[in-house]
Length: 539
Ligand code: ADP
Figure 1 (cartoon, protein in one colour):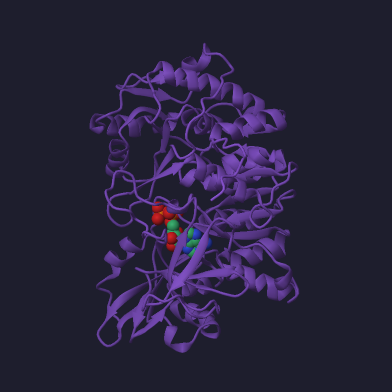
Figure 2: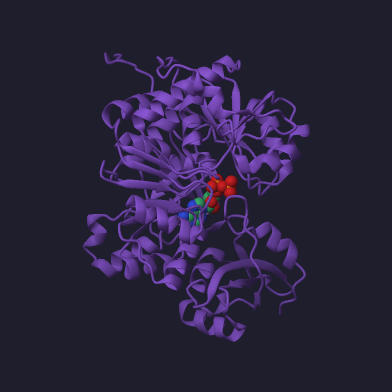
């Protein structure tokens, strides 16, 4: 090999901040807070306050490699942690407040964090969990001095902590493979597992997110991440937005229709994103109030399959394009994004919409995908043959935090636990989770497809399909529906609606009406549903 003669500048997260402050310094950041007025500043301000925070953390004794935990919503202070903590070579563990107390305690102890910074409305949670935290020495409330409640843990005020520090800092340089973020999976199966994102992974992922084959931002975009900063770094938007110089709107903890709509209208939001449940609520709110999102152009949706009816409603009623994405905590999280291509456009608008709305997304440079058949061979990329979806690339997990064995194979392929197809347009379609697929008489029924059709039935808010043991067929589908308020749906009406969409043997053996539980990351909690309905008699 003849070594290249170019510079080997490490890809560090602090580089994104320094760039954004220089190139887009005056571009605004707007942050909705808990019981405080809206906060406004810009990327230059973010750089100043992140420098202050970095020095304050060092004063508290945080060193390179140490873990710091946040329990916080989408606010500018949380964003400052996103830059200051990795900026000094420490690791930010973004705890998920929607987990059970036991799991939150588990993740913080497993991370061995020394400092915990939390939003005001987690004060009660902190009181409950603090006695069980084995490594946290310092608690910081993300508030000014007047609003800080020290509680039994003696929390100090964030604003007081950073106030006296200098507003500039020469960020240290170190190996780009150093850990930066520690994100835990939601633990729907077993204990949550920690995925330790490196600087290199985060920076490459942020750059890929800005490409036209992904989010394709320009400096004129106004981006509002409604995916949580604590869940896989809100799909990297806190990094891709400053790289592209977009205005950034942080919605705090309020994701109801009225709150989101007010921000969209007041701040001119052009691009937003989050899990499907948020958009179910938002679309219902728009319908009820007759309001329209005037500036909104695109909504990126992922985390669970996007119901076709949702993508259609956004486009037909409001002229908003839906971009579906698929990814997981283990992939930083972006895997694929459903963006149009000339080959699809040539099929005509309707066919292109259909193709895009029914697939999770298209291959992105940086993430290789393959579908493996049961016998271990690669399945053909024909859009039909399904199998185990495997991924590899520079922002895919190699090994979980504090485990002895690699999670990925020696050649890098990581089994996602999803079942999917690939087609020759380069699109991937998830048909199910391996553990959720329904095995009926030796054939598979896709719970995701059934849910997707069922949610198009007027009055259905959430549709969940699980396999229930059946004396003859091994398993058969049970459809559980949570209806929109004020709707009286019947089994016959739902099955009539489904009939033209599915083959006959996919017809659910029963339809029941009940609230559908969601996980800490907003997915249908099938583990809980399976336990609750396992004795439901079919056949
Ligand atoms: P959790 O911690 O809840 O597992 P992740 O975000 O890591 O959270 O979950 C990843 C899983 O979510 C994927 O493996 C896949 O099953 C599901 N998922 C994500 N995006 C989509 C999508 N667009 N369509 C269908 N399933 C999706």
